[in-house]
Image 1 (cartoon, helix red, strand yellow):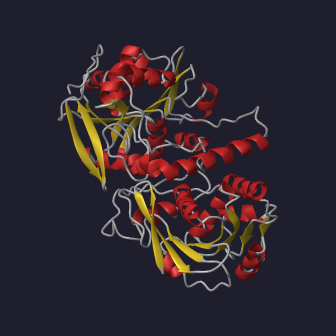
Image 2 (cartoon, one colour):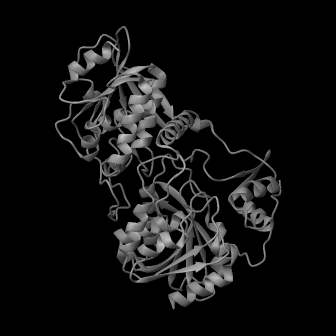
Image 3 (cartoon, chains in turn yellow, orange):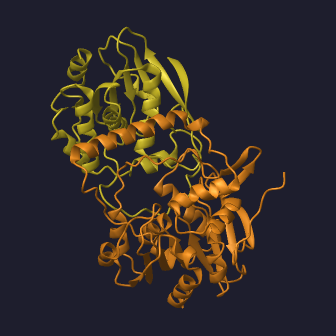
Length: 217
Length: 302
């Protein structure tokens, strides 16, 4: 795989070209604790180039000291990748599914369809106020990927349905695509359950069928 | 170059200052009062720094406390971190506090610091013996006159603008100016505070470079105005607290305040606590009336 290193503030992101192609790129976003390398084995029929991003603190991307992760920062990671490869269709797994969904709402003219797959980090944390535990050290694995702070913070970030449905509506109103989100997940945490009921969100569809639809957009 | 300085009546720089490593983030810590005295923690608000306690902290320390404050990551003299987050701020706080004591200690916290400490008190009640929350009790706010479709457009603009900024964040820097320029800029956010106080703050919270003064606050810390966090979550935590609790609320809304009114906050005051409403005072209650507030606080703690 060819790899491009991109700067996101103090973090260096690794964006891998899984395979070349002609046409609109496909961008893979991995699950929590996974990496672009693991995601790159996903079998899909797509004519354009296929890229895979390592999120902050994952894979070959750098590890920031002291944590402070949020899904919104990872959404900005995806935006950095999109600026490099241009208008794309996105497939996200687990946490990457949530990020694919967020960036589809945030950059509706750049994201030409987002397909959401099951995977680690899909659920996130609570949807209301919770109590933290007293943890002040990332432990012996500090500084290595996957960053322990990423695993802790991104497995418990809040994803209230009222927040996520707003992104679904932004994707629909801004993309000009009838159904810009495709949910293939079997697991439906509250945020997924909420967006499945939104107009513009396809359900009961396979990954390849969704990609075939987005390829023709 | 000899840095310009300012003094302010009653303001005292800390007796001790040092660095603390909070799991890789270098935090600037300050102490007023004798090291052998019982510890008490002072927590500043968002976009602020511990030097804003330079009048208030000595008044608390004079009552026999070891007053400990710190600059949050990215603020004041603490390290500009790669990432920022609510839980990370709480974790840094726990790291600093644990280095001072593992026993419960009183906490006085302002604005965002108050909301952070309510979360910490909720999750680690064994860490906090009493809490004073100075206008850090956010409540649910709405934009009642803005139709839904306009709110969606505002949100889309807000997210797009924040994402655009992330592309340029690495090269961003604060605008330089004279000491007076910076004080006047901050005066727009703190319209009730005197220019003498604001100029004093510049000499602590800003650095003098060859081309002028710049606030030390990390320029990459630009908040998006969006996110999943809901202000009313702080209220839910406040209601659950079981330690002695004193809430202080001014009645004049300011740009850096939460806009909470007594009637919004009162239903959530814990059964162990009380709310004092200070008429005719803004968001920086302890800066506007340090002696009155320190007296109230010390009576409460006694």
